[in-house]
Amino acid sequence: MANKLISEMGLPRSTANVFAARNIVTAKVPRAAVFVHEDASDVMDALSLSEFELMEVLDVGLEEVTSSVAHISEISCPPYQTALSLLEQRNQNEYLAGHLPTRLKGLDAALFGGIPFGVVTELVGPSGIGKTQAKSH
Image (cartoon, rainbow, N blue to C red; front, side, top):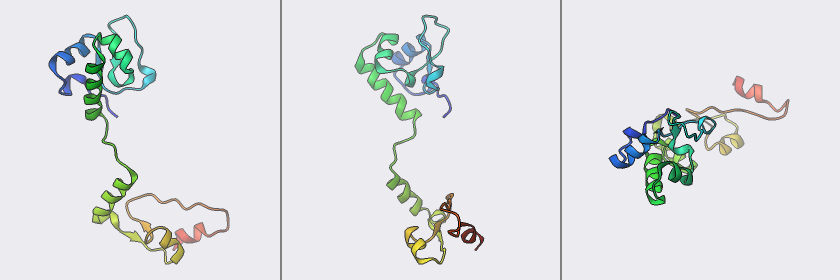
């Protein structure tokens, strides 16, 4: 995920100014790259710090930190999706909903009609079971 600037996330100006004053300017970087130092030249990441660390660094209350983190997370992180919702979305898209029948009744039944279009399918199993033959047809 690309770094997103706190100043461009629509936080209240007073809250955004507090983040900027403490050099917390991005929403997402790897945790290993984040260090809390006294040196003001070090840039920190809002989502890599715990709420208590943010309270200490920003010198604000838990309620303001919690609402700010929720707002930043909502903008910078993809929305929560379940496997079922992804499957339902895929089935709604005609070009992804098709299947390539294998003509093996048991396999087609297990795969709900065959090998699905638009995804990578890996055939695995012990040697001699027919993986190579299946891909050759």
